[in-house]
Length: 384
Image (tube, helix red, strand yellow):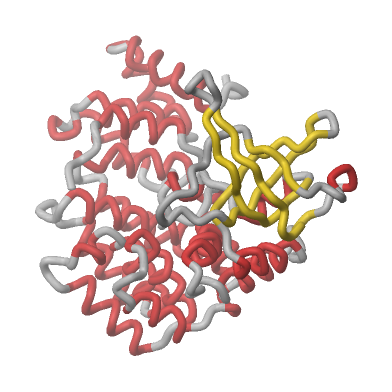
């Protein structure tokens, strides 16, 4: 897997919020940016399951429309109480394997249905959504318990939405809900060849929270086999998290073996950084010495140093201030990206050492310091 362009990484580093406030570490942004069916239902004024009929293209050849015939109302809305059908302002062809059954979330625009979002649906999905609607929106553990029971649903859409609930939960919320997890179900999901690859890291992390010695041995074999299988390599961070949760001493050894090996693929070492971020978000100061020790090793590697420095800065982990500032003079760490990360760290770090460092750099390269200060304003306009 090729490395992403470094300017892209810079933007991600400087404009990303603290990992502790984000969704599950082992889920991609493309997943966590989506709304769950429960969230769609909460914001809709009306929701119904029904069938698509009479799709048509308007005479202009651009716009279209499709009739939606209501079969079952999931969320009633008084003005639409007797609504037998409404028009979706888009062409939805019903051909081949395209299912005519849909679940639509609707708003109210001047007393008329305003279709906002629709998804192909089945009756089991409707039952799932109706049950989800009864959950207490503030009880994250209950919501995750409900979702966990549907991760292996035979309805792919239900299983995907249940996974999305975990993807959007924070690491700390997932750890808090570990009592609702079932290791047997997770083992089956991890072993099943049809389980989508992008869910494996999360399932490995979950199994670490509820598994036993046999799972530790299973994870250790997977992460030490060389070369890694593609499905493990793409989710290495989750597997390392599962292993470390089950056996801290062994797990931290395996993490160190990955991040300190410059010959390993960049993607694998980056994935191990995800494991460090997970533990910092989920356990905080309880694992601070292990996290700081791992980042001290990462600082030696110029291709990952900027990411390590920025994580330490965001978390307020200034234990390694002398080591970070010393990197500025190293030829191996002379890229603008790393030097910007060091300056940003120094602008945030407390103490006379960091203050003196900023003054010295400003005297030699005022433009560099000014650039970083502007980027920090974009990151948090409230800061001066």
